[in-house]
Image (cartoon, rainbow, N blue to C red; front, side):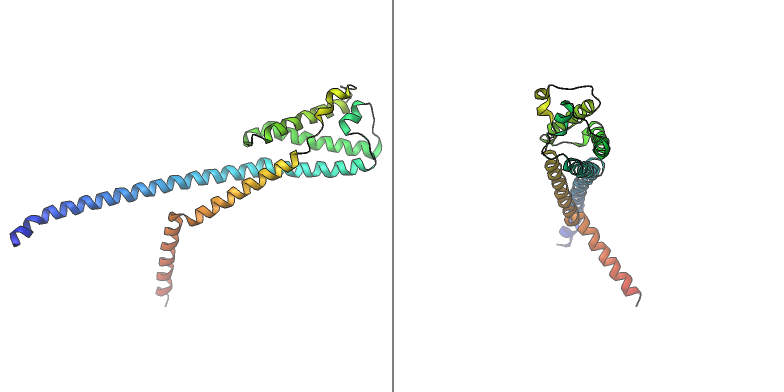
Amino acid sequence: MRDAVKDLGPTFISFLAVLVSLVSTRLVSEFNRRSLVQKQQDDERKEIYKKLNEFYGPFQQLLGKSFELYQIFNRSRGGSPRTLIALLEGQSFDGNDKVLLEQILKVTDKMEEMILTKSGLIDDGELKPVLQRASTHFTLIHLAYEGQIIGQTERFEGHVFPKELAPKIESEIERLKKRLDELNTEVYRSPLVQFFRKVFRIEQRKTLRSNY
């Protein structure tokens, strides 16, 4: 009996070694998989912050400023046609109206530059054509203000500022923030984070015990 057990010893040890190797391989594979998922989530989070900080946030602020200036500019005009059409019809602006219009044009210059230079951060297929229409409007209103184009209002009446731009920007900001919240929640609940939080609590308890 002892000889049989003795003979089985090396076999058992070999089996145990294989088992440990398989378990280790499985653990390493799972760790690598989770690390890859974590990196993908980190990259997506950085990309969202970049979109919000470099395009959507600043663009929304410029839109708001443009809207406020236009509201002040438009109060003295009553039922006058939209600015592009008024300029094409030869209407001129003096005094405060002229100053306000020039400030609005400066804001639109900044928005157009952002549309042209930050287009790579825009992945909403419905937003892109609206931004293109806004950019075209900015160009036309500059040309009309400088007197380079005039008349033919029916030709340009479809190129007024797209009112749906602001709601679409707001909607995209909300979508990105929601996704950011989801990613942050996933990070907090991820097995890797939970593991390290558990280890940290154990080490913290050891430290507290050693102090007493």
